[in-house]
Amino acid sequence: MKEFHLKEWLAPVWKGGAIYEESVCFYEDAMGKEQGGHLLYTPKRISKITNHDGTVEYEEKKDYEVTEYGIRRTEGSRIPVLARAEYCENYTEQPWAGWLCMPGKEQFVRILPNVYTYQALVTYEAEGAWTGCIPERQGAKLVHTYEKLEAGEPLHVVFFGDSITAGWEASGADEPAVDMGSLAPMKVQSDRYPYMPVWAELVTGKLRESYPQAAITKDNLSSGGSTAKWGAEHVNELFDRVDTPDLVFIGFGMNCMWDPAEEFIGYIEAIMNELRGRNPKCEFVLYPAMTANREIETYQNDFMLTYEKALQDYAGNHSGVIAAPVHSMFKEMEKRGKTYYEYSGNCVNHPNDFAIRLYGQTIWETLCK
Image (cartoon, rainbow, N blue to C red; front, top):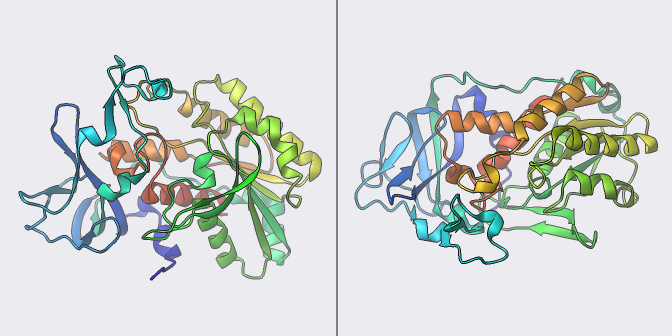
């Protein structure tokens, strides 16, 4: 049965307390050694650990043992292990795989959308405090948006970004999107446990819940594979299809994270300028992309933190613009021991449900007053 757990999905992980269905993964590293099982906090009490679809509940001592950093598998555990051969393959100059190569180009990482089947879901009481990056509430800067919300007036929100904003890998995705090449409308769809919508729908749902008197409408013009340059080139054609926006969420970077920061921010500014030509009171939420798989050489020297700072600097110097520290929150997860395959949705550059929730939590907190 499908259930909508908006409260649990958007509960900020940085506040600790009850952590709902945090994903972990056990996997073989390059040396064949088992890794994984890392939780964001030391588990004070584990309520439940299930397989990816909730049909198998794992038992302590039989399937796992609790450790200071999370859990570890026991001998004979039913918790699966992601074998290295499942997500790595020898590189023989396949033309489509070059960008996925590890250093040395002997192997590449497969795009593995079913990596979620190797991930277990842990619900537990957290011990300890989050001491790193915490999103700052910046909604007071969105004067026109909150005037409409608080007066119960119509508010039209639009999401514009790459595949992560479109919602790829969300278990319950049912989201309009755009084909990058043809610009034709399309849908991102999935139908599996826990049936969680894309983060854009989570944030919109929270807005509607918080301001039930306002008529909030939403469009998503995001496209898999797109870059900030693509967004600037096609902003007018795509926004001609929807009602004039009042609030626009802009998130590019995963597919262009090697461009100079000044070039990146220039494209973002061009998008905003075009949209403010349509509505001078239009306001914006900007955010960079999450971390990608650092085993892949392509992703070892990106400018994403520089992009995040550029977005924050821009927001700090312009009215009606705020910036969410999405990349820093993912870096914080890494600092707390979380490994990439535990929150990845495709082993390469997409978030799984738990990481999609972090997107939603971070952006919602930034949006709040």
